Length: 218
Image 1 (cartoon, helix red, strand yellow):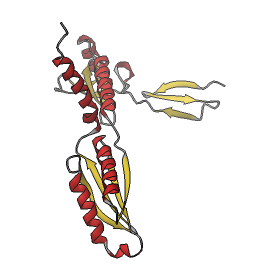
Image 2 (spheres, one colour):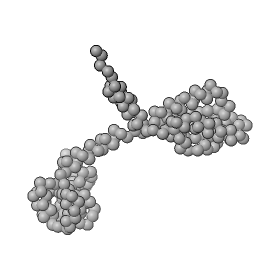
Image 3 (cartoon, rainbow, N blue to C red):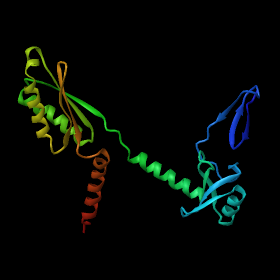
Image 4 (tube, rainbow, N blue to C red):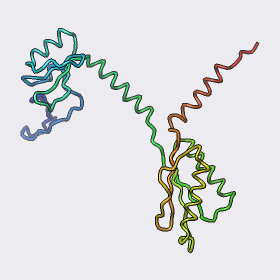
C-alpha cells in the first residue's frame, strides 16, 4: 500500500498501511505564507523593525501588500516569530554563501615523518625537505622520534632534534604541539603558516601577473 501524506498543525506526516501509525517528516526549510498555521505571530518588518504580536491574517495581508513573503524564523518561540522578506532572494543568497564556504573549505591532512635519534645529516635534510613540502602544501606534520634501547634515557636529545627541525622550517610552519614523550616515541606537531586556500591562490595570481606583464611580439 502506498503511504499517504497529510498536513496537521503545520507539520507534514506520512502514514503507511495503518493510519494509527504515522511518522512526522522533518522539513528543514522554514514555513512560509499559508503554511504558517498559528493564530498569532510576532512580526518583524523587512528592515528588522519590531511590529509586534499580530493575528496571522494581518501578517499575511501585510506581506501581500508589500509583495513579500511571510517567513517563520523562530518556530519554537511563543508566539512564533515571522519576518517579511523576499524568500526567493534570501534562499538564493544563502545557497550562494554556503557554496562559497564549501569551495573555500579545505581539510588540512596530518602527515607523519619519523626520525631516528642518531640520524645522519643526509637523512635529516631529506626528511626536513618532506616536512617543508607538506607545510608548503598547507598540511600539518606530525614529527616523531623513535627511541631504541638506552636512547629512552636521553629524552633531552630528542627535544633538541625536534627543536632544531622547528627552527629550520620556521619560515613554513610553527609548533602547534610541543615535543612530548609518548612511550618509546617523542612527538611534535607542526602547523603550516599559510592555509591551503592561500597556497592554491598563489599560482593563479602568478599566472595573472605574468599575463599582465607579457609584451606582445612585434
